[in-house]
Length: 154
Image 1: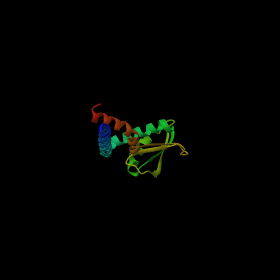
Image 2 (image 1 turned 180 degrees about the vertical axis):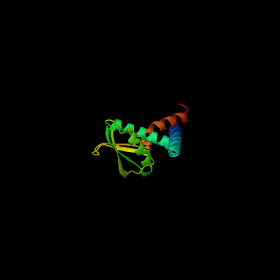
Image 3 (image 1 turned 90 degrees about the vertical axis):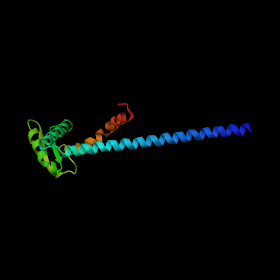
Image 4 (image 1 turned 30 degrees about the vertical axis):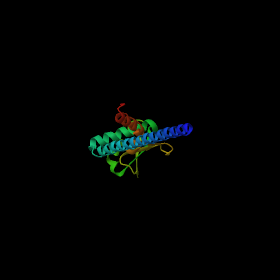
């Protein structure tokens, strides 16, 4: 009888641990889903804000993106952009094409919400500096920051 009681107590403790573990896992999964929603919301707000930028600020942003690409690709670079960004990127290309820097704005358009893709003359090296690519590169860091804020560890 004592053996049966001892076995039942052990089974109950095991079941209790399993239930607690399952509840903790479910809470963690719920927290991760909330985190992902928060990060995606921040990205959507950033994209909306970019779309509302005035033309002078937008042109300055394109200059910055091209300058970053020049650091990766070098001074002889092809620049690709979306059709809607053509005017701002064209102005930035003209402004930055001085001295050893030779930028060529390509006629082929890329599908993007904004930004540029830079490439070497032979297309052997490409640097994607579109807004989508930049957001994707920063998503892990942003997720970490949002998690810190949500858990009070920031």
